[in-house]
Image (cartoon, rainbow, N blue to C red):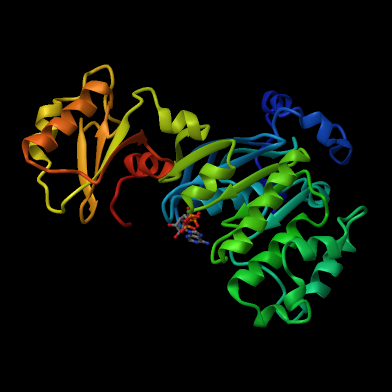
Length: 349
Ligand SMILES: Nc1ncnc2c1ncn2[C@@H]1O[C@H](COP(=O)(O)OP(=O)(O)OP(=O)(O)O)[C@@H](O)[C@H]1O
């Protein structure tokens, strides 16, 4: 990759990132207490089409930053620019204050990467591969302990080629963290894993966070993001469309909530939505639709809007008027998945 492709270092941004780049190799994690990864106005084009289009992203040490977005939103491309695997066509990317392309050599020992497709050599046995990777670092984690935690011993002598998708993912994760990196990029780390493996991965991610590592993960699993992430970036069509803690995103300014009703199937909610009335202008539903009601599965209804005591009373009165005894009526907050679907739409693409 030609170095001339790499964006020029903007001194102001380098300063924000805490860079002490007079000698790249001399930059230490302690000089990046504030920001470990900083992406500003990133543009990446394929065949003239901008698949990442002015994207901003920040990840901090000791925090899990989740990047969410529909298929094709540009998540992997963004992460690959951070990993130095692709050169940006515009904007700046700094990892630990350094340029991932121009300073690749200085960053390599400090950055762990778990690629979506594993990216592992296929002819090597699983544990042998991990020992080999560990040997490249000055102070690696103890291999046996890491292998134990991620359950690699059960297939230690199997070649990578013969591993299942979930097993391969676990080896790739172990290889990404064995060198005690300061920053770890995990592209869909628990995709295809069984629930036990997923728990082990989540525990390891939490431990890395407690050790001060900056973790950037892309995921399609909303529960993974909701459980793990300190900060969530939602990306669509190559830009950042929302950003915040899970709490901030699910509370929102409008603070819409949900009323979940379990009752007989096939109720027509139109009258109920009319009774609840239009959403007050000061608290619009993010989709701009006012109250929304859906029967997500037979007999399970979700009514979303600015839920308050009066709205709940209106729902129960509406049920009573129809002689419907609900099995349950519960109020709750919108989930991260609700927010994601509101922001990115419900259509497949
Ligand atoms: N090497 C490439 N050449 C041409 N187009 C590409 C290339 N890599 C990715 N794209 C396109 O760029 C867009 C963004 O892809 P990217 O893999 O970054 O999305 P993503 O958000 O990670 O999606 P997913 O959730 O499906 O993994 C897609 O339309 C994809 O087809």
